[in-house]
Length: 244
Image 1 (tube, rainbow, N blue to C red):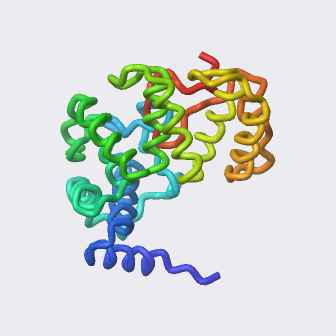
Image 2: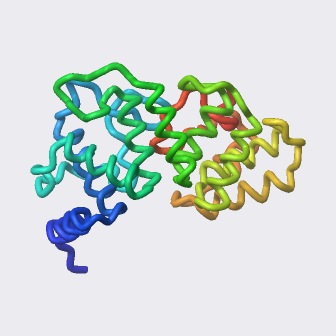
């Protein structure tokens, strides 16, 4: 198939300038990922990915892509401003969540020359906003925080279950489905042991995942080693699949 990535990115830039929130998110996300891939964040610290990893930016759909020179003209602060407009003015949950990750990593304005301290208060505010806006990754991250009590959230397993259910039912979030399955399987978070419900959610997770050959074993039906951390969920402790 004929591919012209530069032309495609130019269309995204045009859409972002025209005020499309999804295009704003894509352009900002890709620009920040390009900064990270170029090594611009190496000295000041990257943006933590899943499980609170302090390494490079977790790039989601663009994971593993090289720095894109067509976005070189977009600075970190400009990318942040796009995210702020998309989230604050246009209600884009993914943009709010990504801003929260920046705040948690000490990059609230992405001034890469001066890494600040993590701002967990701002992270919590933006995470709650993103979850309220219905972003599935934000809902999963919030659930994980609430399940164990992380990043300043008090433990609230029942609320964690509600977040997993919303992310699973309305966002198609495979990891949230997995956590629901494990919670039902083990009788966690105030739920009674219900293997039928567990099997339902494990099968839903299997159908939703993009991995080849997923199995119930992978999703924690009979092992404590599986991870409950979704991409872009920098939380402490892990969810019910972590075995901790």
